[in-house]
Image (tube, rainbow, N blue to C red; front, side, top):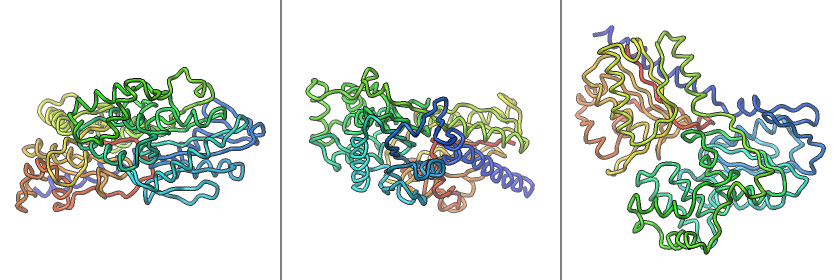
Amino acid sequence: MNNILNNIDKMRNDAIRIFYKGIEAVDPYAAVKRFCKLKKDKFMIGDKTYNLSRFKNLFVIGAGKASAPMAAAIEDLLGNKISSGIINVKYDHIVKLNYIRQFEAGHPVPDKNGLQGATSILRLSRHAGLDDLIIGLFSGGGSALLPLPAKSLSLIDKQNTIKVLLSCGASIHEINAVRKHISMIKGGQLSKAVYPATLVSLILSDVIGDDLDVIASGPTVPDSSTYHDCMEIFYKYKILNKLPESVIRYIKAGVSGKIPETPRKTDPAFKKTYNFIIGSNIDAITAAEQKSSRLGYHTIILSSMIAGDTRQAAHIHAAIAKEIIKSGHPINSPACLLSGGETTVRIHGTGLGGRNQEFALATAIDISENKNIVILSAGTDGTDGPTDAAGAIADTYTIIRASSLGLNPYDFLLNNDSYHFFQRLGDLFITGPTGTNVMDLRIILVN
């Protein structure tokens, strides 16, 4: 028995090492430095080169959980060439900057600080002229951190709308479609504000498939969603009676053509807008794969695009782990299963938790009759839901340990209270802010 427990402890430590290797690969500061180079006055961004001597001003704008370290990298590269800059970051995510102002703001529910920062960003954007260069820095969290309600709507309207969408089980694509249509800055509207200046955005992806118009609600990207899509989302989740009446009226006015749609790809502003993804979930998973292989595991990447219901995803991952034990398929043990993406929790209870903690709890229940399986599921940003944990770590003895403490895992799962379940066991995975954000990373080890 001691040998088995020692092996579980080793696997748990391995899972943590694998996770941090994935985080290292998507460090936003390093990503900007890899993607951007400065040689005298020539600033190279990806496959494009900009002669800075031809621009009157160089402004920096942005928002997201990773925008502060991204800004630090830009300051290291450009220094006093930066005329001015403003970014919105999540509370406790700031870094020391000399030329770019930071607004700390609320996430996932926007607040007044976010509104103040977003207003300042839009004002700076509109100040830019034909001979100016704007560098945009955007990452996951940018949607909540750029709250600038459309005319006739208030910040409270946006806050209440987001709370409803977050609790009904809507996907990030659906949530952001609504966000774009009740905003003055999202859905390509920032590009319109900047035009005719040149805008180059560096983007750290936190959405399935790296869809540019969804990351941070696509402030610099043509919008493919419509007001009609928003109404369909409201009907789909049966939330019309839960949303602010002002928001319903506004969306209906958009459907009837009384309010212009968000900018399409034919808008002239996008002829001077360039967007580059500098890091994504698959980068983290690939680095995790390399680390797990070096630790001696046969490794398989299931997908970087896992979405849908969290508990269903947990059942599938647990089933694959059990298949490895039973038949050696799809790989032999010792095995490492890796996946990424972002699942959705359907909230039925009154507990506390997040999608990663709920995934770990549901998986732990499924594997409780097996041996030598470890699960680590965590958000790469260090945050899982409205908690201080990035996620949780569990193994085949989690349910046995819980029972010895008088904890019924099914009760906690039904009440969406995975946080307090793992807190009692000492198995919350707490990293603090990681400075990056590329969705979730799930690691399942089987030996």
